[in-house]
Each structure stands twice: as C-alpha cells, then as structure tokens.
Amino acid sequence: MPAQPRKFAISAPSRGGDAAVHSTIVAVIVTTRFPDLPPGPETAVNAEFRARFRAGWGRVDSVFLARTARAEIEPLPSAWSIKLVLEGSAELRLGRRRLRLEPGRFLLVNPGQTYGVRIDEPTLCFSLHFSPTLAREVAASQGLGWDAALDGREVAPEPLWREQLQRDDDGALQPWLGRIRARVAGAAAGAHEEDFVELLARLLARECRERYRMLSRLSA
Image (cartoon, rainbow, N blue to C red):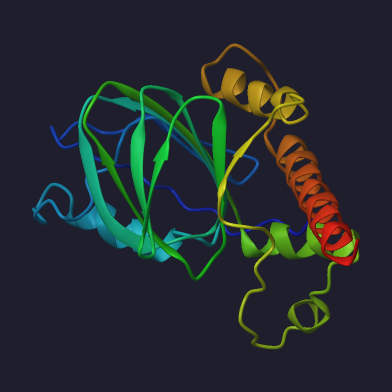
C-alpha cells in the first residue's frame, strides 16, 4: 500500500462566510463547497483557510464535489488530477489554453501546470487530486519510471498523461468515479484510498495504450 500522506484539516469558508463541509477519510480530504480563493479579496474570514490551502494543495489526495452557479478562481498550480463536470459547464484556463469542460468528458492535468476556472451557469464539478506519494508509487508499480523520485532525489515531476479533453466512451472509469461520488454524498460506505489507487492505475494504463496506438500509427 502507498505510504500515508500527511493529513490536513481544512475548513473552507464559502464566499458567503459559511464553513465548507469536509471530512478526512483515510488521509483523503473531501470538499463539497467552492472555496473562497483569489481573485476575490483576502479577508479576516478567509485568510486562515487560504494559508492552509496553500500549505496542503497538491500534497494530499483529495476529492472535490461541489455545485455553484457562478465562480472564478485565478490560475493556481495543479496536482496530478482528473477533472469532470457532471452538470452545466466550466471554462478551464490551462496555461495559455482555454477549454470548455462539459458532461461526458474529462481532463487530466499534470503538476507544474497552472489552471484557472470560470463558471457562469449552474454547474456541478467533480475532481480528484492525487498526491505525489500515491502518483509515484502507482506509476512505479506499472514500470513508468520514477526511479529518481522513489530514491528521494529532487527531480521535476514527469508528465504522466496528455492534457487534453477525453471521453470515457467504454465506461471503464465509471465504477470507481461512481463509488467515490456516492461515498462523498453519504450513499456508500468504506474508504476512498483503494478506489484512488485503482482509478489512478487504470488512468495510467489507458494512457499507455493510447501512446502505443499513436506510435503504431506513426510507424505504419
């Protein structure tokens, strides 16, 4: 099993000042309300949360499932993550690109990339963020490198996948995404970690198959 990442207790005030609903299950942070982040002004209400968010962001496994009718978050550094919109739509600013994320598609993002979010209609967002510990160990288990990282050397994170909109046409990812979503909603028992490991392994295997197909087409 992967080493347990550090736990963070984050209570995120919404833009209205209420505390966000969250819980920590097997070192997975769960957030169910849009956090109050820049470009909104820093206030006495959100200052402590923003400091804790910056300290923990990208270092822990986390689930984000939240609904909003309007939101804007300025670009921030990403973790290894998969991002989905279950209802509505969201504009993602990925580096210099602008992508429209809608139901039926997902986006994979590598660490080191920056992304921002803009939402102008009722939208339900769902994303999973994988800690460096988990990403490295699952990638290593599939023979995808990471020797230097596992030895503790400081190296730039490798891009594990292509940053483009994709479809889960065969539904291969839905059992794990569905279980995690149901657990967040309180409709399923158990811990998130096993599903995180299995989902990440399947995403990496999917990426390897796609790269093999691309190379095969180039060499044909």
